[in-house]
Length: 137
Image (tube, rainbow, N blue to C red):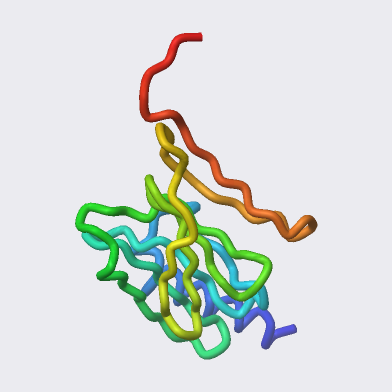
């Protein structure tokens, strides 16, 4: 029991000291194996912060291929090892092993993505968005 509590204390310290300062609240997801946390970094460039809970390491994964002033808006795990994230215009897949970011698809014309969630029961992702042009009801 003591080692479990000690492990939680170490992980909490890592979160507060080296991880939280660069992340926006709520913009994080666990890996499918529960060994890592991935979060949107809150800085000048689009990046995903990675906290490895097994060896207590921290890494920042930057994506220079994204255009300037592009921000990651949402992040979620997927049914496999990939981490999915959205910008206003695009759904992306991040491979934590190769560190590659791959474009999956663009938002439909006239809409923007705002966030993403994963349902482990149905193995489905849900993306929220909004129209970019005003419309009458």
